[in-house]
Length: 94
Image (cartoon, rainbow, N blue to C red; front, side, top):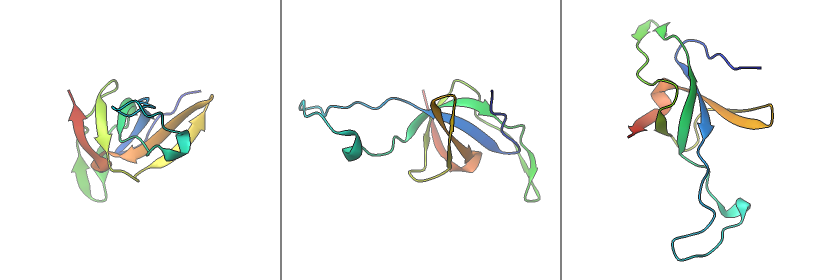
């Protein structure tokens, strides 16, 4: 099963975070923050949203930084995804 986003929505998959600090301390899963770097899995078509024309700037495969608590989390086929609006994406990581 695949997720096909609508309008200005983007489907993201979190990039694995390191479980140890630079000094070598291992962090428990509960002590880790929600990752802000994610990989774009699928992109909606854009179009007119709320009366304004929206052009999609990200594409599948891009690594992006999102707002900390944005989006809706969805779990499909044992994989967790986050669906956000393109406006919640702060930057593309190159």
